[in-house]
Image (tube, rainbow, N blue to C red; front, side, top):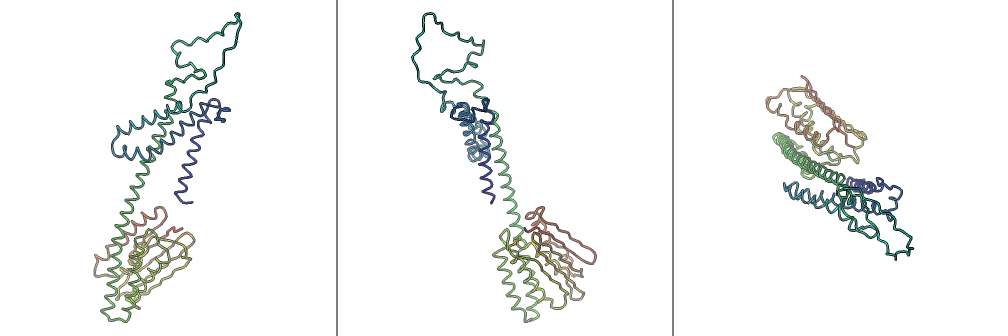
Length: 364
């Protein structure tokens, strides 16, 4: 069941429960279940239906048009008009039951009319019940009867609309930040890979053509998949494999490299370019032709998780500024916080001799 269907069912169930309130809280509970016989229940039911209609009118029209635009006076006037409709319309649509007039029965001279009850002083209009065929008078009770529930509907729709607007703003901010981070990542990869091919060309290596083919495949992946939120895990791992193959062509046997993948990749998705920064960092700061270079990359996939462990020994670099830039890793940290909140564990161990990255990612 998708999110949209779940929301529709939630609204339908909420409306049904709301319409049961005038029946469940009616003073004549046994008779209120028979709506055709209970005029007060009919009026309350119609009033609650009008309040449901007002909820959606307020949510989709009044709040966006008046409240969010700062037209508060018009918003209050519209609310008051809607409240008067909710209070008065049920009494006009469902009047008191009228009976066909019958001729008065004949009575003897000795018969006396029944005594009429004396009204309470000061409450003649409030306590008096209308007779058959007599229109019902409005009183303070008619106005305040649904005031509390109407105000609850007003505030609930207002809070819900404001909450949804805040969530939408957060999503737009998240998407803008992700696009900014991706725009920083892609040129970074392209620059490093072109440097690799440039080194091969200077050496006039026979692997130059193969490296160009692998680079074209990598760039095709970046251009077609990197703008998506999630991609198939197989494509992300294929991209990583092409990158490692390019590094093998470049460094040949000067680097001791271990690369292992295990587990079922089928049917799983992952954010694009979320792993490559840690692997690239190992080659960037763990390779020196004059020193022993040891890089280990292990990726294991379970039913619900991806575990990656990247380890490299530290070597000497002439350019210390490049060594301490860390742009790719910082961007990846931010993307993990945005895309996998509470769904990842990242542990970075920066010791004097080794640099280790351990990442656990929930991909189910």
